[in-house]
Length: 349
Image (cartoon, rainbow, N blue to C red; front, side, top):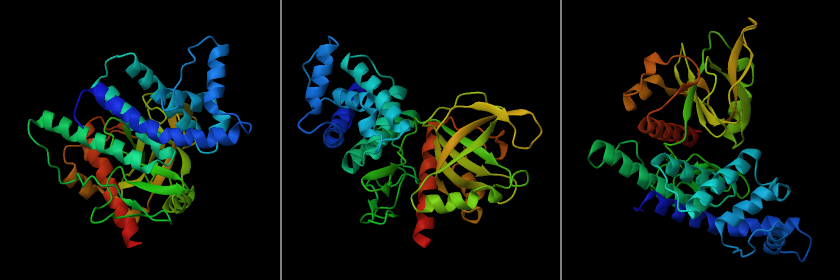
């Protein structure tokens, strides 16, 4: 879809509303006393607070407000992080309704957050529509930057991967898994890695000569994520004192021997200070992370492949844990390369 940034966000909000309508109906219907309708409840609340009472059930801003203002009704299907997504989208929706301008970065961020919330509520068709918008934006942005049509060998066909009842991602009719494919984690809930070059991405470092992750939950993380689960953890971000926020992406890079990527996940906190893991008594920066994929280092995405496929990134000169990948093209390539690698591992297992 072409059009202005405002047009694209408006279209994305329409897609979101189609999914949130039945989702809100279902969980508010189960939460409210029999015979009570959530639209009536919100109207009464607005009347008491002196706000306008004209409301439409299909208005995405109202649907998001229902979710944000009634957390007890949605605490089963939505995590705290996903409530934050709803609040963030509400801000974008209000900005859109007041005809405010949107930058490229704002638009990328809005589409990504909408995609994440759609994944949380299990809205697969709507999620695919958002991913199509993101892919189209990425192609146009790269074409504008390079002054030509961009055809990257890591950009895969846009059709999303099928999801089997067991939850293992498989190829849909002739299309390999790509960044943005889904996998089922619990019934009706999709885990998503969106094609979102706007999402901040950081590399965390694992030096096996200094820290034996193998004896501190590594095997458990591999098993948990292989079956669609998550593995909460924390990791040092070196000298970094900030810049990481909940929802930012993380990749784990194994250093020293058998180098390469071994894990991906999402940060669930910002940076905080605590005593360094080495017992020296000095303080170091840490951040909480939730791994969605962890592989054995024998199955890593090797450094040699990273250098060949993403040569513009300084793989031999990463300066410590918490290194931000700032180039949006590199971020997208990295997501796609990792998604392909994990898909190939799953297909062989």
